[in-house]
Image (tube, rainbow, N blue to C red; front, side, top):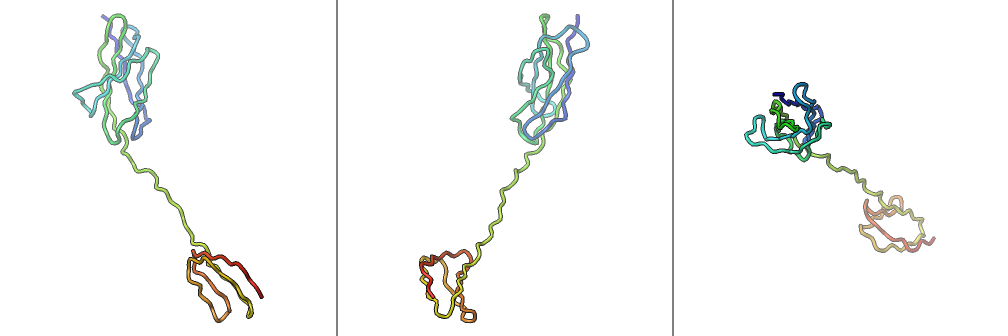
Length: 157
């Protein structure tokens, strides 16, 4: 009686949410017509779940939607018209931990202060201010603090 045995190995592609599983065709026994890939939790699971059945020409599977920092075990079994072969050796790997994403960041700079220079006889009308106008008697200017708004409706000399 010939046996069907596939060899299973884990590829290096690994993340917090997926593992890539690769395998090779059996070198002994009859040719497989399908592979059955099973997954369990932990390095030595007691419960197995069939993930998928694959055609004999498929040698890779990306297991997605996994949980980070969790160990998953896999085993594979071949099938042909004569029945099932034995399971492959169990292999396991642990997904990477779930790392936090990048935070959003921005820089806000305050707008410049509004400064109005006046000549000795200038008259202006300012309305809709959101800050207190501060006259400077030394240089005859008036200024609003940074972030303020004002509407200048007339400027006459």
